Length: 266
Length: 306
Image (tube, rainbow over all chains, first blue to last red; front, side, top):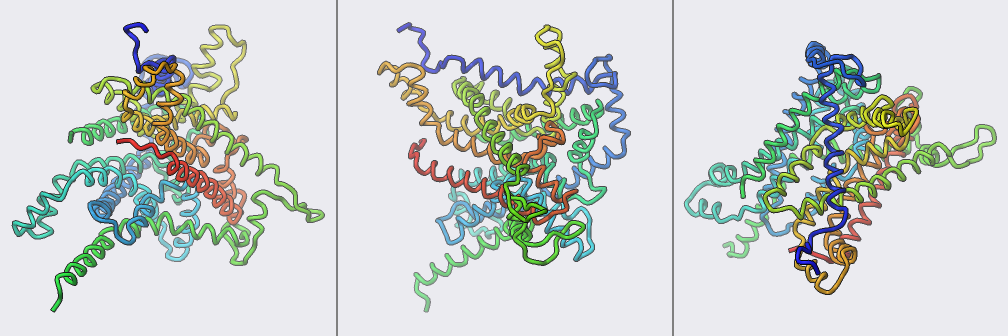
């Protein structure tokens, strides 16, 4: 056999991988380029311009939907991360106890059901509550988003906890620290990267949601994705490209941050 | 006097109780805004549709009958509901083909990533993670712009003279397929990569030492070892593909409905909430069957990674 025989080589695999990476990024790059198009069609190039960003910025519906997305995302991310942290503390670093498997299943349940089914279920349930209580505010969206963000926030927090042994906490307890003090001074600082990662994941997941929001929202409660879906269905202008580009930039920034936070520990 | 054993038991009971209290908020939120409402869907599927949406509280199994069957308005006979069967068939077919397509593309990609040097691996992982966390609607919209009649694909084909008129891709099943394969590809690559990263290449080397061909090494050594990742990836792609809503809404136009569009219709113009509920439960049953098959398969393939 030739001396440069590589055991890792498989014919064609590199070519397929290269194609995949190009194909993954090409549409996104085209989308971004056309956001800077001066022409009002998305098929010909009319020179560089920022006018679609300007028009998106001056569109009150867009700003309104963006603010609502951030508001729901922030509340849902914080709530789901707090709940997920508590749940992770309750389900890790212990011998198996009655109900542990049930908890795993319950926490991951939102991941197992197609979004459309959850959306329909919430539409039915919340419309009942709306009739019953007369309240039709943003609370329903926050509740729905918090629920489906919990399993995502739970993942990195649980992973981090499982890599932390109890030595330091036991040492603190031996030195007469109260359980609360042990938690605040030892557990929480060690767990912090996991919590941050969970928070960012939850925020991104909430910002991305289309299906469940589409079914749960009342009139005038569009988030940015549901507003964009409505616009795309009606016909497309480069303004959607501009909004998408801004949105993309934000997602990339959060993912980059996430990547560094969750990789740094080793 | 309490014995040491009793004290220990009491402490253990307290620990379990505290752990239930700690997990209570998460469990309650999920019960309220995810799991609980699913049970209501089941109840609704056995009720009678109201005239203006919602339901009348009157038992009826009509919704379940009309998932696959339709009643003739003249002689009351039941026959197969062709429209529903078509949509079920299309959804399952598209979900399966999407899973296979992402597997065919994702497996080599994951292999490529896992065989890079320790340092550059993180970069490739990062490159696959970005689309994964990028808004699905935006990515679908990006595909829409590429495959439109005036899009870059058709422009290039026309300029090269390969076709004389734009190829109509948008608003066909092919468009939905392309879109779903595009948006779900990272979901296939990531779990396969996770398995592949732990692959012990000494086993591959042993295979070559025993004169196995490259294909044989792939089939008999690499594939069995990363099978858990392959199964996980397939499930992660199949479930959202079966219930896909955004992709068929944006790329399929009005005509090429998938299950989710059919369900949405019942809650909109269709005004048949019980049928919508029965259809939703049916989708869930299909997903559950797929998950069960996964669990059984994962249990059977006893290959474990260190």
